[in-house]
Image (cartoon, rainbow, N blue to C red; front, side, top):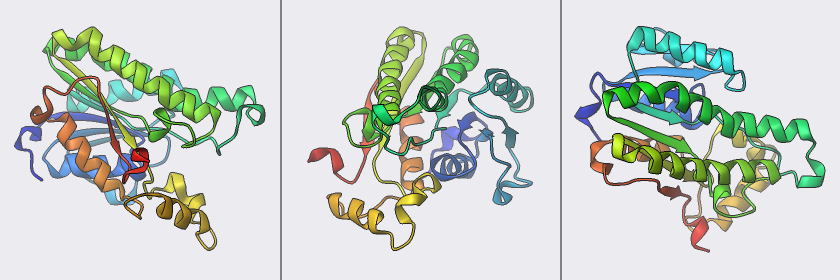
Length: 248
């Protein structure tokens, strides 16, 4: 799908080195957008020497580093009017009694607090421009139990609430905020499910009505739509992309 409106627009994407974040970077670049990409991992080889890309290495759990990375990207490519808060990590499906405080805080810092920091850093510029779109990465674990452990499920539920409040507070000022709730997506974050004979991955596919895992580009395609003017009347929603998992 092609969206001519992205030509020359600046997009900010966290978690940009792999999985869904990398797929989002690819898709927006293919649409002619300028992309500020942030990840704690080095710039992927496929993105080396890519025009219209400013790649910043920063840990989203480090507020100073994250804000500095955003500011450096803005200095080169301009104010982002689209933000994809995609960075996140799993918690090993640990129940609460198997989760120590450091693990809890680490998951929330990566999955939830990073979105707060990014949002508060770029939102003033969006308000000045009287337009801006946030596409925040939630999960089916933000809607039901079982998609993660105690910390991950709590963080993803919180992202949905934060996104709804963000949209409510600023919709009248030209801001839109929505969530994507992926189910089984074949990314490096889920590599453990495919380890060995892939028994867990096969089980997940068998339990998914669509009988398969999705590819990251399928989530990126949904992102393109939600960030576009075609979705201008979609506010504060959660859009599952889960092969039918939630319908059960």
